[in-house]
Image 1 (cartoon, rainbow, N blue to C red):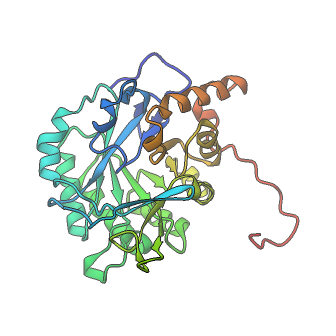
Image 2 (image 1 turned 90 degrees about the vertical axis):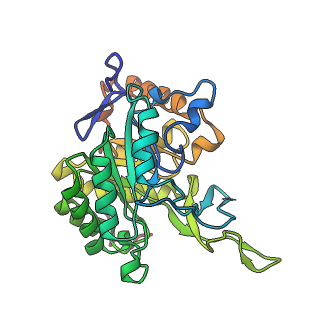
Length: 322
């Protein structure tokens, strides 16, 4: 895939040229074809598309309800429904137009061995890069999510690194004690980039039946409600990444150009769009135009000139977090 005529929106991410800093997030656009049926939508308005989470074997996913709208967001617990890596590589990837944009596989698993095997299969494919979803439960360790333990996160990254030379993007969970420590371990294990953040865990309750609305009892919260948390996590992880030249896809509640610009200033090199696509499939064009207008207004020649330019206030009192 080659970019169009050079524009201020063109970026380079892990050595890959992107048309724009926009990345469509895994789980929100199927396997890259769902929104192409919407009139006026084009994958060319993006820098990359993350495909749906893929496991070694097919999965049916969780029982309903799987999705529930909340104030300022959405709970989802799809359960990694997918046809398995063999079908994705053998039947779905050949149907994608790699001249439109970059395509990033999303690797999921319930053991380190499964992560390795799925990554190995994608390594022998035209996919441009691989995102590692480490928020999955480790069935061999009592169901604790890989992403909530820095040591387990590093083990997954290390295994995937051995399986491929393609760029590895680790998707960090906010549901952990120290996201910075986790990022450091993943860098040492071979991660080339990060997606920050994955969804926050939440619940909704039916007060008449007194049962959870989501069939899985809990689900991942996305949308504008999580944006302040996501911004802080991007800023924190950027402090580690900037010294290692590790780029970040900032994500979590972005639904306009102003949101996207905030994430770039906080330290993201690219920005992920997910939940906003559900109510505005044409949002990418609007965000691209808004970023371009901002760059022109501030005499900035490229998105790169904006990344990580946050200027913190000087502390005048003991830090209390309030």
